[in-house]
Length: 335
Image 1: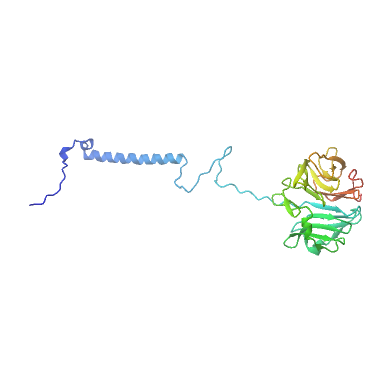
Image 2 (image 1 turned 180 degrees about the vertical axis):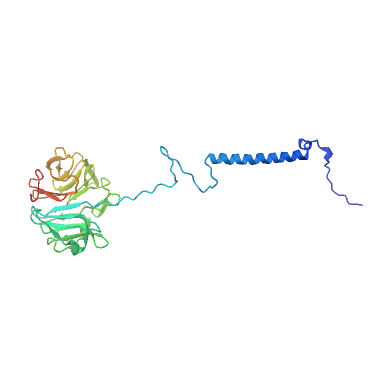
């Protein structure tokens, strides 16, 4: 017996004639070509639509992102900004050991050392103290005169500009290291590139009452700072600043029973006005009282203020002024 073979039961005669069957071979060819052209045209149109809506054939490249209120940037990266330059050191210091003996210093920098001077005739003449030769002093951060012969300072010394305390008991002829001053004398840190400074008290940095401290004065009991718009005193009882509004302060001198300061823009004074805040401690109710006017003072120059035995000195610009009556009247020294 011949093996049965599997075969299909489908027969062409069993189906109905379709539209495609009714087309001739030539017409079917034209239909296929037309359909292909239609598909190509559709792909082109879709590509054009994507391009118009911001699409990109390179997914790794981002288009510029527009900003509100301005013209879209040409690049997705932010513009480079120049780093702010470091503030020029403009601070200066003056301290009185008596009514005739004065000490003064520029702030200096690690590259341009400070200059320390001493006067024995109430500021008429000055002698330079060889601090650079003695211990390579570069920067002064605080200067205190405890007597005619004794002076203390906090500063940075050496090639690495290390902060330390230094003291002399023989009018600056010799110096010794005094690290304890760092924890007993209030001072400012060097100016940072953004112009800000911090206040160091008891060896610890404390938040300043403002971004930039423009003047600082301190004794063993009081620390006072001046900012662009406030005068503030550190309250040791609660560890915070007590401030009153006052703008334009150039220099401050702290005394046991008052704060004396010089400021520009004082009504009735064309130079620097001298004012005082009475009391052994500042409160929020404290007010400044006008004392005098330094008519010839340069209101654009840095200044420093000191007092001893009823005499006050204001060092501003290239001129030293003195007052024999606690700030009421002023005259340039040597005039």
